[in-house]
Image (cartoon, rainbow, N blue to C red; front, side, top):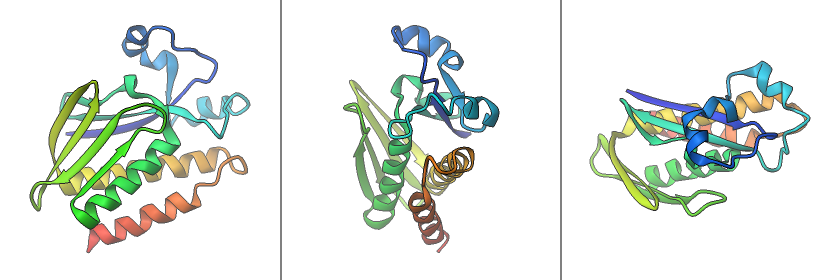
Amino acid sequence: MLKINTFIKKPNLEVSNLEEMIENPYKYFIRIDNETEIKNLSKEIDFDYINGAITIQYYDRFIMDFSLWDLVDQLWSYFIKLVEEVLQTGYGTIFFPDQPVKVEMKTISNDMLLFSLAEGKIISVTLPKQEFLNALLNNAQMFFTKLTSYFKGNVNYSYEINKIKAIQEQLRH
């Protein structure tokens, strides 16, 4: 039903044709759980500017795809803040770190959430609230935990990981 994946962009490959990149995303991106290939990029990655993509697929429809790649660690941090806002107020909004893409989430019932993404065209999808928020937090946690284990000393995401755990605890109650 709901699939969320995180990818690191290969730093040595420039995207000169967006269509070609979307058709062949694995030429440009590596899944976060591909430890060997990601560790092999350690000398090329600028740890202050980690480009990558978060893909979100609901059933067979992509809500976010590779065309929305950005500074992926910052984008995950923004999503954590967004989940927190939604839980506190029922509504939250963020913009991507490095492009004018707006993301909004709004609670529309106890069980459902409206997720909107505006980047030229507007995509709005009604999603199961608990499942979606948990999936976002679990994938953010996996991303930050894996990067921390791959690149000890180069990155420190303890704040983000602790924040996720606190929000997850809040979601359980």
